Length: 84
Length: 294
Image (cartoon, rainbow over all chains, first blue to last red; front, side):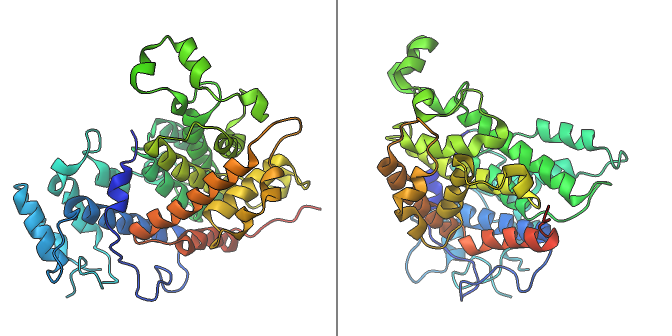
């Protein structure tokens, strides 16, 4: 199974900290950091996949995603706005 | 509460949010990737290996579990490699080092199965050529490994030599998917080889500067270094060429520099950076300090 390259580059949405610094403050177990890396990649990949070129300037990404999913007859998972 | 989808958000969603991603985005994914997110988040190599068991301290169980694991994409394997190189946690009755080496070896096995000179699937021809008998396809497209100085039966632990040598051939040309796979697999190979050999890499790799060691240093320069300056020096690449082998050193330089650039772009698009990957390496080096053998 090949990685769909186009998905990865269709968006440059960034959920890193604003200063571009490390994901975690201080040092913690590699396994915990690895889980955060996985979630970060999944979140960005999902956004790239669903949003594609659907973003309209001035509209929030949440609204973009809602509309993009609605067009496909899908719904945003209820827990989607949960934050860590 | 701030929504994680807002572009200025520095937060990432909680684990619970992801359980339905596969359902929500289902129709957009290519066939075979229906469980892409589930596998990415909860079904990684180390999750599978270290799943709860009553057979604690049983290394053969972990090995068997690893051998049953198949990464869905090179990206999934790359995440496994990143996790492996930062692994410093004892689990299921085994030391972190034993688990890390076992996982690293399986990552290398996965790369080896795709790129090895004898049976590597990456050299299969696609399109009309694919209808030719196997031995003709091989003659048309297979790299001349003897010219490159790579043995057909190169070992799993030395697959990094293959990954660098491939850059001297035209195998990667005109196939974007294969080039993307090569980028991720090169990165995974470096991380897994480091995880396998640390903390006594001088014992595992030797003290002398050999083409093998130079190949590993080159992968570090291409996928870990923050700038591409070490790739600009062709002497660095020439050190990877085995005695009496012939490489197109300039072509290797061009492909590695393109790989360096694209890897950074991929990481950026995923919300990561080389710094994040380096921190996993540092985590290993602090958690399991290097052993100096006299």
